[in-house]
Image (cartoon, rainbow, N blue to C red; front, side, top):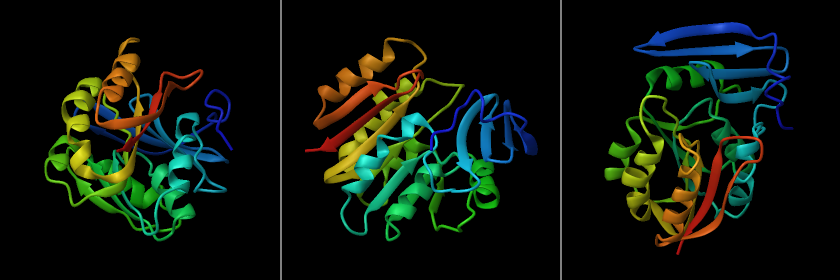
Length: 221
């Protein structure tokens, strides 16, 4: 069930709040949902009734990739947020091994305390995504990039750091799911052209209707 961001996340009670440098982190909750905010931007939404649901529209294309992963898949996620992608994958593929790269210790700690009701096991690495990809811990069947930052260009990081290193991280015939919120309108199409010109096969790449998010699904040839 998709969450209606305009109407479902109302009358939220503040569970916790912390300011780190110039970033304000908070978690709110109402009778149906719990959600993580970075400043005023919603990062993740968890259904209290069924925590494994993918609640946001841009997450729905991920389902198709999870369905075709091999047995005991290795998954690497760049950016933890509230852990909704990981909870969903474990609900569908309990044998999956998931590594997560997250630069904020706050996000890692809050996932364990507020967003892990079924106590799933994740291998969390406190690191910058670019630094981790220089020396990845092996290769993966699926890479999920869900990087968001209001202080620097995610577009530049994807082009200069993530895309050039995908081949060393993803197994042959493995997949990547890239969720991207452009700062400029043109960046969505620019990233799509870069993927089309790469060694990867672009399976799908479109803007999510009604949202700024672009989602790209790619396969290593």
